[in-house]
Image (tube, rainbow over all chains, first blue to last red; front, side, top):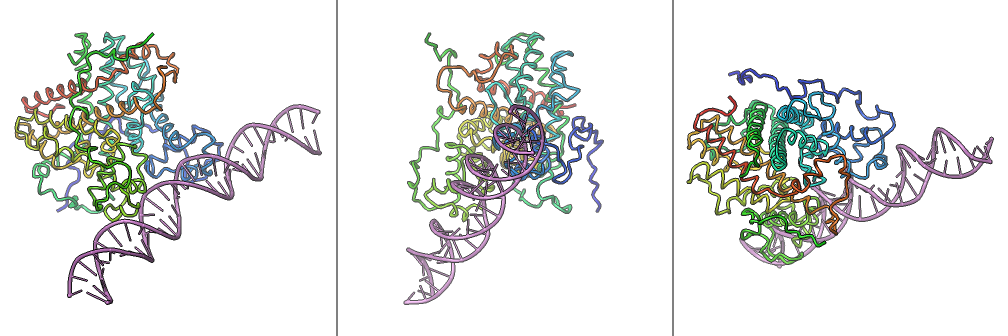
Length: 262
Length: 262
DNA sequence: GGTGTGGGTTTACGACGTAAACGACGGGGC
DNA sequence: GCCCCGTCGTTTACGTCGTAAACCCACACC
């Protein structure tokens, strides 16, 4: 019995997936160690670190190996980066700064606040999907201040977002509440999406078609009944739907000029 | 000018905060190393690990130190735990298993699905607040299967949740979609809440009343204008509001018998 | 009284992050 | 020409980590 793997109907391509856009990274030559003879600098190091994590996972990143991937000894990195912790901070900064290079995301809300939040959300999602191994770092590294909430870890974007909201008629309280709800939504959705994506690949790539007889599911009849549905990946649609719903909710908050809770 | 620190009005106590309930852990004697002479076993080790992380942070946990906190050499732990990674898995499991001991959370949805989800959400929130240093681990450790989504990392709870929903009239698709939306919501909210809680304490506890002249905010006028609002902690109310909203949304999904997106 | 055997210790190894001393090299000032 | 001094990368070294392997020892059992 040859099982048809493509029972999932009409795989409409995800517009935020890396292969759906011209990926800017991973095109540079790089290759095995020692190719890059260009002089070291902070940006090159951070870029190499991001690429290294994308390729080998966060756990594999050590100062020595990162140095080797740049054709240099570990200690050479310390002239540009104070230590490993700060290197990781630099990595998350580098990755979220990719937002500035995204032609679909603008710092100023020209098309209204909903358009702004929508573009920003998809921009962040694109980053998460492009760097699934880095995103947990984006999510969990302690932020600089209580108001800089992951995954939007930059004051410039916070300022942009709040400006867009206030300019569109949100009260100060409502804008702040909206900002909080928005970041929670993004963080939860994207962290789960990348972790789910990771788990589909990693478990030692089960070689044959044996559908994971690993754990005993007999205790959980409903889980086995819904197994097909549960393992289906509807991330893109769910993201869209939840985002739409959030925007709708915020719109009524804005119109009624109140803070959501009361 | 003596600033009154209690400008926050009516600090109504958070019902999920650790001090609002009789904490079961941290009451045992324990004390400095060597107090516990009881024989080692897996549960004692995992308990000690949780307590150690709560007290000293995840980064400080090493096999040697954990051993020392139990009055034992590091290598003794390996008789009960295969290695550090699996120890961390055990820590996560231990912490989420506290749900079973929570008298306000039930495995069976006796009071209807909304009551069930509400109790479960608050139970998980209590755990997150009781172990802020552990929760990022709960959020980011790769789950065993794609359908076991953090922070509900146990098949039993997934089965319970799905059963509650299906029994209450959700279609299979709607139940799965609801499960996904619910876990995203929990994860996003709680991860941000504990990370925010962490950042209020950690930055080397700024000793005097100088309100963080660390970063230059002059570029971000709206952020400085809203600074007071932004650093206010309304987590409890926001959690409640967002949860309520989610439940409301799911209720209409249930009544109309459709999957949210279409 | 041997003799396993379970549970903890000792020793040892390779890898890690990083401090400190050490080249090597390239461009002024005399 | 020569010297001298930054800049940038390397070498060496130290303490700590996770963990494999050998060891030790006290008790249970025949």
